[in-house]
Length: 404
Ligand SMILES: *Cc1c(COP(=O)(O)O)cnc(C)c1O
Image (cartoon, rainbow, N blue to C red; front, side, top):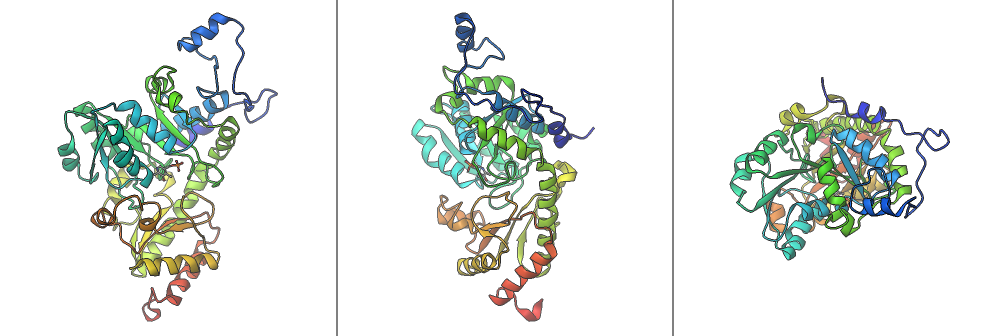
């Protein structure tokens, strides 16, 4: 039977203290114990179901974590204060001094900066490779490698990782495969394909209302316990904990994720097909022209489509900037980083979210100046949006009117 991530979320019932249809929010940083012995046992990690202190865990965070674990099909999960607050403790938990990471070279700018500039301070080194080539990935593995790191659908180039293939390599070399699934919640279920740890920035599609940052680490009970360990757990000790009030609000938004993802995908598919027909260089995993279209198709949970992210290349940064400003002026979306909002968001990654990546490396990986990344919104009338976007491109002579 096919994996049903949305059903898994919806089947979870959490009632509030007074029979509320939403769980009560635990508005406390600390918890009383009826006996001193139980407090000691809890510190030792031997008192299941007891809460200690809210940096460790809270009822509200556990509800959200359980729902996200159900979505990914992992044993459990730990929510964090941001996506980076999920990624950094995972790397620090899995790697010590002298260890090595093999990472996709097209990843979120902050992750890239962490692996490239920060982790080496702790003598953790990273080789950045073309993740779509399994032989290149394998060749980068050394006797010190501990982690294979990638995004299911990469930011901003929308490269697709062969998760099952990578999982096989990880198994063969005794590595942990860590997958950031931020761009493709519900569509792709990395743990079902063999990933050991699945991470999300909840800031994006999952929360979907651009009102908070948040993150999650989905994995085995053993790994999540390790992260929370009071003596040497990276989540516990680095302290990037989500607040309970926020966990409760993200959980409410998660309940409608399946409907939003379907609409993001329908709208993005429509625009990608139209943009491509106009002769614009368009990248979208749902287009047959995408180099990994078939791979995505084979991995995906069909219902949720190919996601809300697409890119076009309009030739130069000046043109990209002019187009984004004009589209914003005409209320077609916002010139903003981030993704997964009800409104379309666009930015030029080379000069914003991926500016951490040096220019020559950007060129090598195909991240050109004129690239615009779109997070397509929930527009009720996407045909109208397309017509108005096309008009912007004609007005700016990105499109020649006689050709369209
Ligand atoms: C935004 C993002 C992150 C970082 O998440 P924050 O919530 O901003 O810390 C990590 N990975 C991907 C793919 C992202 O888009």
